[in-house]
Length: 282
Image (cartoon, rainbow, N blue to C red; front, side, top):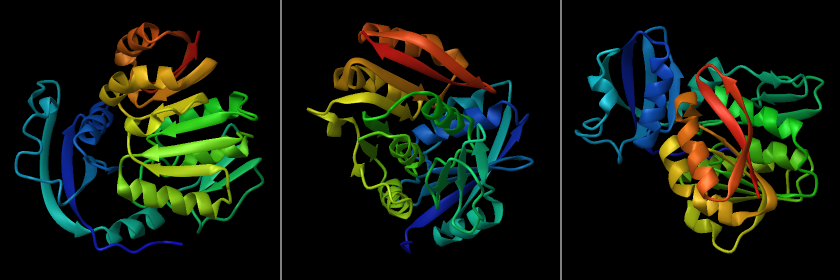
C-alpha cells in the first residue's frame, strides 16, 4: 500500500561541466551529506534532500565545488515530496539483468523472466538502474544463497533483499537508516510477497549478536570503511561480503580494511568507474 506524506523536500539543480565522470562523483558526495535521490539531466544533476536537513552551509565542505577539473553551479527550490512519484512514473523504465531478473514498477507490464521484482522506488535508492545496484543484482544471480541468512545493509528500496529471498535465502534482514527507505522497503517486500525479509530501521548498531552467511552493503566509501569491522564480526566462517557504492580508485582502501578485519579479496565487477568486490571471511 502506498503511503502519502507531507514531508517537504528541497530540489537542488546542479549544472556540471563536464558531466562525466563528475555527475556520479557529485551524487556519491551528496549522498554522504544526506541527499536521498538523484536524477541526471543533460546539464548535470537534480538532487533531493529533506527540508529539515537542508541548511545554508550544507555544501560548505563539499570539496568537489573547489575542484579545478570541473565547474559546478547550483540553485535550489522547495518541493513537496509527492511530486517525486510523478517523476518516477514518467521516467522510470524497467530493466532486465542477465536475461533472468526484471526490475519494474507496478505500472509496467511483466515479461517472461525467472525473477520478476516490482518496485515502487519513490525517494529511495535502488531500482537497478545505477551501476552499483545492477552489479549487486548480478552477484546475487551468480552466487548461491540457498538456505542462507543474508543481510542487505543500506537496503533502500529493498530490491536486493527481495532478490536474495527469491534466490532461496532462508532469512533476509534489510536495514536502512532512513525512515523513507524503511517505509518504502516495507511496501516493496509486501508487494513482492517475500515473507522471510525483515525490514529494520537503523544502522550498524542493529547488528549486535546477529550472524549472516552473506552480507550485501551498497552504501558509500566512508560508511563502508567505518562499518567493515562490524560486518566481519557478523559473518560466519566462510561467509561472503559483497560491497559496492564506491569508485575503483577507492578499491585498495576497501581491500585493506577488509583484510585487516580478517577477510580476503576474491574478485570484483566494474561498470564505468564503479566497482563491486566480493570478500570471503577466512
